[in-house]
Image 1 (cartoon, rainbow, N blue to C red):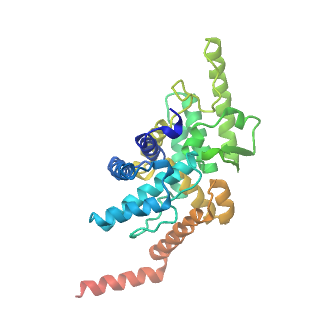
Image 2: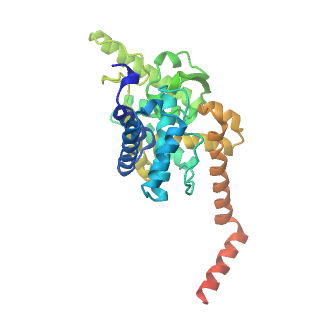
Image 3: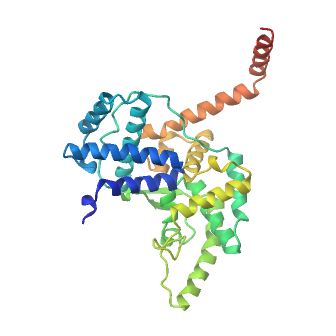
Length: 325
């Protein structure tokens, strides 16, 4: 069976696993996505259509069907969101070349900005990584993982599968092969290069010892003896939760994708332009990158509300007025 001939359930399950690993999607969210996408796939089958070849008109027809069934506005919006995310993932994975749902507007609901972390919270996570683990090798690997992730804004799948050949020679720039086999160059900070150099020494020593035992050498920077040959997305997700606890941050706030958001938001706050951030993140469309301007605007607005003396005075007056009613 070729990849394209696999059943819809295969594509849906692969998408859900990536959601759990990269975005930290909650169990209830995954179950809702599974129900929504399974219903969509079943409807397509009833129309003699396939999940990976459906077009915009097919998706719009399904939404009309949902409306005719009397589904609530929030349910229809959630179903369209799940469909959009599935096809975006399909494009990133190279399953298809276009996203047929990208221009479809649903019944509408309030947009939520992506979650991010403050610079102080990221520093706390990096500090936690430096001492987390049972051995010096663990400390060095965990530090390298976190420094590279924050320095580059890589997706977690790109990070854990990074080939060791890409980081040889103390590189100032790192070649990242993203989803859909798209390549981009990202610069490495001094801290990231230092942690990379230390980890490479320990990693290569471990690989040499394994070779003497007759074990094959790994081509990955973060090798594993598991099926993939490298650290899995799920293992890194678990590690990140442990670091959050150690750093005194609520684990629910920290996922690999939140760190990607932090990378972009902090760059923008320090003067980087959107086009540069788009290139570094590997976004095909500048509109995807523009969400970070909204995050920054909201944070600046909250900063004024929390700290400006006139805002505090106004809040005090409002409180007094309410108490006198």
